[in-house]
Structures are given as C-alpha cells and as structure tokens.
Image (cartoon, rainbow over all chains, first blue to last red; front, side, top):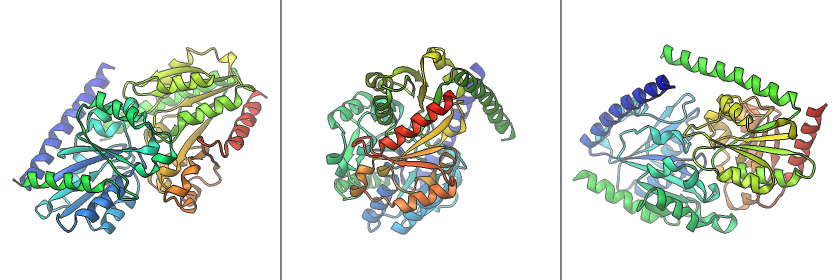
Length: 220
Length: 220
C-alpha cells in the first residue's frame, strides 16, 4: 500500500510540474483558459456550443476536447465556430497535464483569447489532475440530482465556478435547490454559480459576461 | 510505459481471481447478484428503491452501496426495506472485487435471494473491474443524452442489461431514441434493454419480472 501511495504521489507531482508549464505557456500568450468538468451528459458540449456562438464575434476561441473514443464533441465545437482539437484518451477517465501539453502543440496560442478544455465526463478523477488552466468549471445538472455535492465532495471543493444546467427541467424532476446549494456552500463557501439552461438559453448572458470579464483581465 | 501496463495487468488479474472467489461464494449460497453501474445521477439509487419495494414481499434482498464519501445511498436502500451495507471507497472511482469481498463479510448470504451492488457513479472505470456478480447492469438516462453509447463504448459493450431511465422526460429534452439504440446495437448486439421511469413507475414491471425469473433460475 505504501508503495502504491508513493507511485501515485510521484505521478501527481510530475503532473503538477507539467501543469505549471502549460500555465506559463498560456499566460505568455495571454490566453485565458477553462477546464470544464462534469458528469457524462450534464451538458459540457452544449455549453461549449453556446459559449462559442455567444462570444465568437468578440473573442478568438479554441476548444480542446477530451474524449475516450470519438471526435463527436470536437466536431460539435468546430461546427459552432471554434478551432477544435481532439484528445482521445484511449480509455483514461480524465485528462492530465501531459495530454493537454501534447494538444497545445497543435494550436498557435498567439491566435486565441480563450481556450476551453472539455474534460472526460466523470465527477471523480478529473479534479485530481490539474491541467494548468486558469479556472476549474463544474457543470451540475438538474436531472442529475440535488445530492451530488454531498456525494462528490472533492469535485465540488476543487472548482472555481459551478454552472447549474438544465434549469428548464426543474418543473419535471425532484430537485431541492436549497439542499443542493447548502451542500455547495459547505464544501466551497462563496463559490460563483450560474443557473442556466443550454437548451433554452436562460441564464447564459451572465455566464458569457463573466467569461468576457475574465478574458479582459487576463490581457492586462 | 511498459512497466505501467505490467502493473495494471497484475492488478486486473488479481482482481479477476478475487471476483471468481466472490462468485463462488454467491453461487454456493444461491444468491443472484447484480452490479449496477451508471453515470452520477442516472438513477441507480432510485432503481434500487423501486426494486426493493417491488420485490421485498417475494425475495430477501441485500444491497451493497459503493460511494466515495457518504452513506446517503445505503440509507435510502435501507429505508426502502433492504439489508444495506456501505462501502466508502475513500476517493476511488470504482468498486473492485476486494472491496466487494470485504463487504460480503458483513452479510450472512444464506439469508438472501438477491444482492444488488451499487457501483460508484462513473461510465469509465467500473466496467474494467469485474466484481464476481452475475450480471452487469447499466442505467442510461434520457437527459444524459443519446450519444452516450458512442462516447463510452467499453461500458456499453460490457453490460448484460441496459435500463433506459427517465423516459418521462422524453417530451422535454432532445433525445433521439433511434440514434441511441443504433449505438447500443452496434456495440452490444441483442443486449436486453428496458425503458423505464423510476419517477412514474412506467416500465418497471418488465424489469422486476426479469429479476424474479433470474433469481428463480439461480435457485435451481
């Protein structure tokens, strides 16, 4: 057991070093970057589509999509108007800093203002592997249930922003928003959250404003 | 890289040996067992509640709940009327055969007909670790999206039954059932599937009948 812990620690420490290199590269090109995490089906790709369509007249956007097997998500990001790069993880359940580093080689960062990295759909592993991006973003979803902060505390503790997606489904499912937000507040006091619906567009303006402000601040 | 693959193979082979031991233990007690897998929030615990309530007058049920941090799911299974044992994985994103072996110590298997094991919410890792249970069950969910077979092929290939949950939400989301089922059929031809709603109860009778038939066959 001790040996296993040592190996895991070494992997994480190597990952952190590479994450720092990624951050330096992004900073030197004044590219603001997001690591988008969520359960499968919470709406990561839909949010990327909405964000690309909403901001492509103001910002130059790149998307890096982590997926186990397909390029479906990168195809959707490209169709929405972003420059998209696919990472096929070959079965790995999370991205790590070296995967991002290899993907960044395919982008001339001087051409972009905003990079969105779509992690593998998973509420457990991705939060343990920092990528070097500026902000960790979690998409929760209404049909996913109000107990998720309590059940996946490391994820809820480790993010900078929580998007609460599919609020258009609130009338049709049992979801106690107070219970959900209480869990969030215990784990991550004061974290920024945006209730949204990628389907109807509700709440997305506030999210897009936040992104633009962050990109502008990154340029200074 | 070679060294890493060797280590992973050794872990899997040790896991498979322990899974066989678990199966022998279940078989010798004539306990039929299910390994329930799904994305977070697809409805694993709701299905367990429905199954326990629907069958507890005919069958003696035990539930083993794998969770990262809480006993919320085991509490719900116990409240529904099952004997429930909690496994806290301490951050691991899947159950494995040794975790199940340790949990089985807490159950006198001669007292049960059916064991349901609720895996950690994750569409990637759980399918790589056989537990020794008789059938692998996947819960897909309508709001989780119709592209999931294509994006998580190992999971869709590795299961014996697919429950398609939250069909009551079909009118409110974009979900192309033909596209979903085409992906399922490519990956896992002829796999048994049940469209259900744990919220409204629709379709659950067919699922419960299937479980009962399997339990009866296991007793012969």
